[in-house]
Length: 542
Image 1 (cartoon, rainbow, N blue to C red):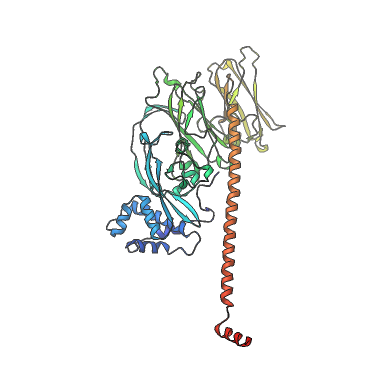
Image 2 (image 1 turned 60 degrees about the vertical axis):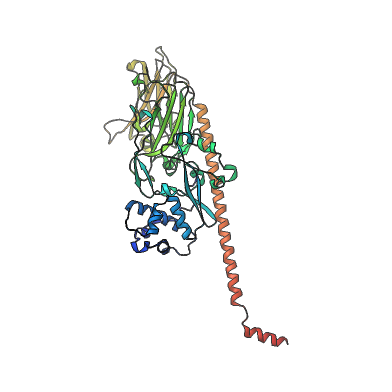
C-alpha cells in the first residue's frame, strides 16, 4: 500500500497545533502579521516547521468558515472571502513559505467516470504546493475545508443495492456543504492527487517523468475516493474507470492486507444510466441479485451480470476502523458499458448478505482453514440418473473446534429436494471437514455450509456459501490476472520502501554534514588568535 501523505506520519503529530489554533482570539487577528506570529508560538526551529504552520493555516480557515465570525479586520475579512487556494497562498507568502498556486482541471462532485469537460464533469480549479525541507507538498485547501453531503446526479435508475432490489428512478439532489477538517487533502501523495486534479503544467504533477500522465490518461484513471486509500485498499481488477463487459459479465476486485481485511466491510449500488438501455420486457424478478459479492481473506470481489445492453454505474462503499464517520463511505465509482446482456441472466439462488460467496472470515471464526477451493463458483456435473456424481470440498478444522462445532450443509435453489444431494462429514482423526454436493437438474444453486457451537448455539448459522453451477467457469484467466496484479503491487511497494529508506538516509547524511560544518566553524572561531597574540607572534619572528 502506497503512502497517502508526503510527510512522515510516524514522526509528525498535529494535535498540539490544532489545539493552539482552536484558542485563537480576536486580538490575534488584528492583521495577517499578528495572526502568523500567534501561529508560530508553539513552533521552534523544528525541521517540519513549514508543514506545521501550513496545517495551522488550513485548520484556522476551516474554523473561521464554520463559525462565520463578523466584525473582522478588513485584511482578515478580505482574506477569508478569497478562493481557499488564494487565501492559503497569501498566508504562506506572509510566513515566507515557498509556495506555488497550481492551475488545472479537477473532477467535480458530479463527475461521471470517463467523461470530459464537455459535460461539466471536469471544472477549472486551483490548488497549492508548498515547500518544506526541499520537498514540495500538494494541498487542496477547498477540499480540506469540508465537502458536500447528500449529492445525487439523478440521471440513473437504481437497480440493486446491497443485494436488494430497488428499481427506482433517482432524483437529483444538490446536497449540503458541510465544514470540517479533511486531513486527506493535506500533503497528499502526488500519485493519489493526480486521480482528482490535473495541472496545466505537467511539472506540477510532481511525479517522476516516466510516470507523468497525459490528459487522456487522467480521464481514464479509476475513480477512487479518499476512503479507498484510508481503508488501505488496492484495485486488483482493470485499472480504468470505464469497464467493458465480456459476455454480459464484469468483475471488480479490491485487495487488502489480510490483517486489515478482517475488519473491512463493503457494500455496493448498481444503477442503469437513463436513456442508454431499455428495460421493457425484462421481468422485475430477474433484476435482483445481479451482483455476486465475494469477500475472501484478502480480497473483495463483485461479479456482476447485466440483464440488458446499456451503460451502468457501479459504486462501492466501505467501512473500516480507520475511517471517520458512521456507516459506509464512498469508495469507488465505475462506468460499465454492456454491449450484450448475459445470456443466462437470472436471479441468484440466495441472498447471502454480508457473508457473501466464497471462503471468508466467518468460516475462519468457526475454526475452518485451508479450503480445497478459493473460488466462489463450483462447477458440478448434472447427473439425471440415480448415481449422482458428487463434488467434494474439504477444509481443515482447528484442533479446538473439532469437537466444539457441529457442521452441516444445504443446497438452495431447487424446490424439489430430490434433485439435489448434499453430505457432510467430519473426520476427527485428520481434523478435516468433508462436504459433498450433487445435482440432477441443470442450473445454478447455492451450497451453504452451516455451523453451530454445540454448547452455546441453538440454531445453525451460514458460514460459507458457494454458487453451484453446471456451466463451465470463465474465471480462470481473471484469477491469474489478479494474482499477477497482487505480485506487481507487492514489488512496487517494496521498491517504494527502499526508495523512502534511501531518501531518509540521504537526509540524515546531509544533516550530519551540516553539523560537521557547524562544528568546524565553531572551532575556527574558538581558536582564532586574538590581536595581542598575533602581535606577540609577529615580534617573536622579528
